[in-house]
Length: 183
Image (cartoon, rainbow, N blue to C red; front, top):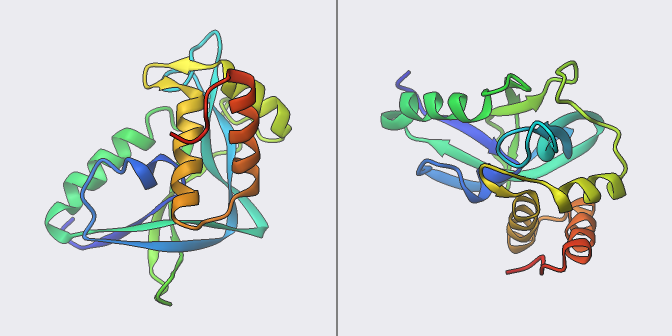
């Protein structure tokens, strides 16, 4: 691959992409919502106490606000290999090319990682309180599940992107853990 491409970040790809993007813009993805609907049994939890990580979940009535990252042609193959290793580890995500809208009005296709609702780690339908309880107590190889939530919520807020569910979760998990949701 030697062509430029876009990646849609909705969670940790926003604050820790793992590659240097050629461009970075606020973007919107219609028909999907950001959701803590995937169990994490390694990175933010364990086999005995799974944590939760964000995924894009299909929702015809929603639009997910995030960040579009353009990958330059000279780094395209290495970046795609990296993203596949990072995002497709447990096959809980499906790689898709979806239409996004950038803040400047452009509408490119972007690589996005969407939850596979048939995967055993899919756990959609949890109440926000259930999510908060799980996130507050979970820890994995990458650290506390709450840190993942707090970093994502703080980054979205700093970009002026509203996600009421994430804001509520950050406040509730801060109450449960006694840790500040904003560092």
